[in-house]
Length: 157
Image: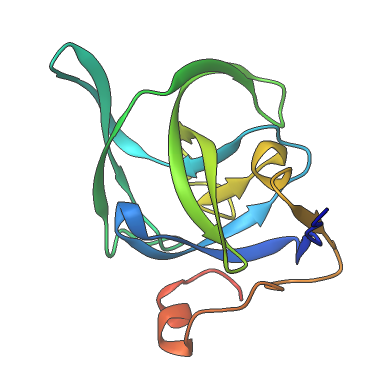
């Protein structure tokens, strides 16, 4: 029987979402959140042959509208999500292939306005349960993009 050791990640990580045209985005690893979330704005529901899809825009860099990416994905689900302040809101959920610490996985991701949050993306327990172990004493255990890419991100490294 083959066992796979868990991949160690820190409390924050750089991740990749190549299928959405997002080569890098900084994410907070949040074991207190069940579902992952990403900053999405200008969200619209569009009909594709009788199926609901979501069209939205992502800003991958903190505090910047540079390199905005328009995305269209099918609606995976809709859920009531409780924020850390206790507020409950309905959010759309999409299924997104991501790369975390060099491993590919599929994450259910809610679409939310995270413009005022410290990170444009949050990775929750559902995604982490796919073979990851969080060491809160570490940052960027999965590696970092080149310095030129990191400089585009304006939040504190």
